[in-house]
Image (tube, rainbow, N blue to C red):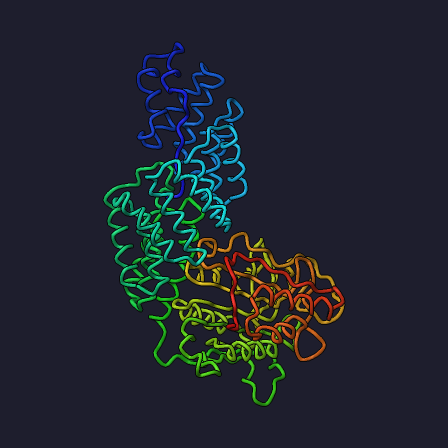
Length: 581
């Protein structure tokens, strides 16, 4: 349960003082303004009352409010916002601001939601419900300190608010305070043992602590409770509780190595109807994880090595380097003393340069080798692929995502061509060939798939893309000097969301070699300017990852004389060290 409903202070009974049909007074009014009325009946009754055109001002605002509640039960947040906005034009109230803010929250538009909750609090009097809901929005955007402060205020106003304890616990868990989180969520369970949501939150903590058996037990009980009784609060997005519970149990089964039960749970996630942003993100994750498990079942035991693109010329390599088109299986780290950590720290490194039908790049394989070597030296288990066609690239990525299921930190590094189409980012395999009338995106690898496969509340994800940020659908424009661009155009898109796990858990950072609209240079030496700087700093002991990227940025700007400015987008919640202190 993410949010709570605030009922308007004025009585619905006032609506029926105006002269109208007896059926309207006796039936339509209660159907429209009773929160237990089924959604379709509520909306229909409110529609008929509005059509009578006998109410105006505050009374008409009340009808729009209740029709918005009906839309909210159906998960139609665009209609909730439309009706709430109409009600606010007629008569502003805390209840309507709260309802509209909650709809914006469920759409993932957290800043707008916070604005509405602020307006509700300004109208007064201060309400624990609104503090709770604003805390949810702060939590959604990763501002956990403000979220905890709002949950504190909500608990002070309502000491028996199980949901506020639960969400405060989830915020503490996001900041790494697992014991404080567990205490809060245990209190939520004590206050209301019939609620499934606190059990789901507690399961995440058990999994973070490595207690998979307890995580499975809590999610199984949450599923039983959710099936036995629909959520009492009408503000809970329809289907969201079961979607969340099945997702978390599926991740727990996968961490246990029980693929059969994990597949069943992911399939159940996809059977649900997702209306809110969190449920949609959970379904994206379940879709990828289910496909990975099914793919593993279908793969032959003696799986052949991925093929390289026949049309792609081999990239120049050093005598000791793997051949072009090759994939290096995960290798143990160089330092035996760090072997115990390898199962918790994994990396995927891909370098594509031997393109057959678009501009070839000499350096990405060199860049990938350098970064892979640096990561192995600091204790990562690395999967490495060079000059991969689409089939080999997808297999390498899918193998890595399966390996990452049990990891605590995952790093993805890619060097080569990269483009964005319709706001989505794609990595380009070496056999890409753009043809008129063809579906270009089918020939590339969608970054959203990688992000969904890594999305988890207990994993830190670092994605580093040394790729040109252009759009191959843009008009052809010649670029000066060697760059990682196929054509000039708009840059890779900033992610609209970093995933449900990344915004509620350990966090995600995406680093691009260049800023929007700028060129990522391939470099005149053996490495690109970005990867050369990255390889110098990634292994520095005790250097926090965002400080490391700041040093990389400064070097790249100096080396390129300001032509290339690395850029990043982060939801990291604390300090992350790739090379331990």
